[in-house]
Image 1 (cartoon, rainbow, N blue to C red):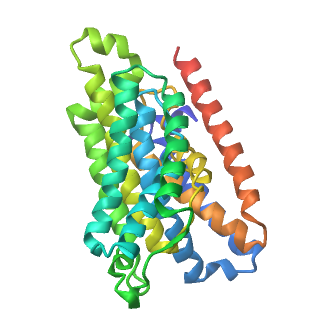
Image 2: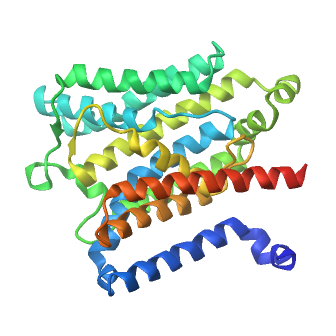
Length: 323
């Protein structure tokens, strides 16, 4: 195992990413065999990717927050809140489609600013802030839409936004997700902002003493998360059209699981954008595979919870070995 880790290719790519790729291939093969090769069809892959797009943006966003040593359990309800408010304005007030999409991102940005300000400048615990934001997002969306579900227009009704997800069988959303993931990877690994965000997770007091504006960069991580959650809301309605108030919690754990599985440490200071994307693909393939086997989504929730526990334990064990 040590020789494998010392291999130049493995060191460059990362053992965790290689393992995730192998897991993806083995999962796909397993589901194909169990479903008597029915899973091999293009429709299953497209359906799996539809799930991966919005979940991918959620995971990318929460990766920045976790990198600071924080957490955000409000991302799922906030995503629904963005979709509901902007969709209601589109349907009820005649807001143009482009403006509605911008509003969705704007609502996510406001929640990111709200969360970041409370955590960074008022020193409220991230767990408490995220729980409060989750309830605010649910309540705000319900009040704004009068507890009614919102259905975004289909492509034939002028819903050109759906082409952001796919055009025919071309997975446009995959290219957009990978492009934004590339930007996030550069931001996290190649810029001062990313290095400072990681420093906060490693040792915020040492970062402060070295002259880093801890509050600014902590808040910036939440702002980035908010913007990505707003983008996730666009891809959610692009894939599933109808949104109901009071939901979204189920996507919190899945997004966090994708980030943690990809190598982002729950203790902060370590993050992998490429790993997050691979982790999201594992979660989305698992979801589609379980449905293809005839089981309900409840089984996927159980497996996702187990995955989170295992990933966190592996992270803890790795840190102990380093220490």
